[in-house]
Image (cartoon, rainbow over all chains, first blue to last red):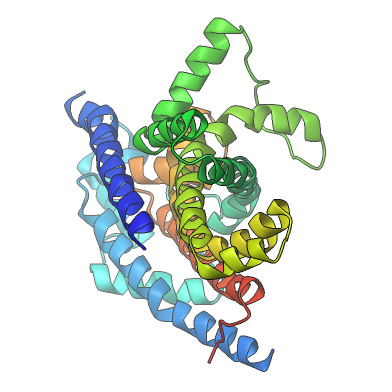
Length: 33
Length: 317
């Protein structure tokens, strides 16, 4: 199980990064113009 | 078999509260965004009196809950209403656009599974060497980049470097398969990239986990060919978490089509939803959300049923 747990942790941090980028590129640019 | 039937019926019944909850939340949310559909319909020249009249005609002056129940009582009878802006039937618009989103999602899933499963297996077999390293780096990039960013990069890359632009306009895949596939190449690539990345990572770790198990050692020691050990013994067991991931990710893929359809100008449900939100056209938004939510739930039920085919130990009761 450790293998899957470690990968899931990396996946979650990448997803967070993805969400941050999504916000900056899409939402923020729409909000601020 | 009888268990599966009751299980499916149970899951379909569970859909009712789910859809009620989702539609209610979306209805409240769309009514809380600033902006008035009557004003948007009339444009800049409309006066307040005209807007009031339009609101009355469309029933927008009634309380929120009453409007929701009106919409719901129509929807259960199969009538999703008419767009406030174009006056076209929402069901007609959805039926026209559903095939586009369906094709995009289905091809996205197919592409990612076809790419990701072999990559994950190769990565697991070559653990910690250069090939594994490259596959892992590419999958991390795939997970970290938002799909619309990949889409824009692909458009830039293909049109700048190769001077290749996909043919414009959407055509039915059954009518003109080659042309339809050419149009869908870039959207499918950008939509499927993140799914492919997470599936290949999950396949890798799940395979590594299974390859450590005792039954694999037994299979090897009884002299089975490595190919048989990998595909018949290891992969089948490693596929269960991968399948769960694919099932969950298809939902995100359906959501991802909203942006991808906008980036690639595809006339699908996602784009209809986006214009619906811009125009505060709530019958359209509600119709789109209804279709997306029901498809998501049906796909998840289908994934849950396929478990029993992969692992006969899984029983439904």
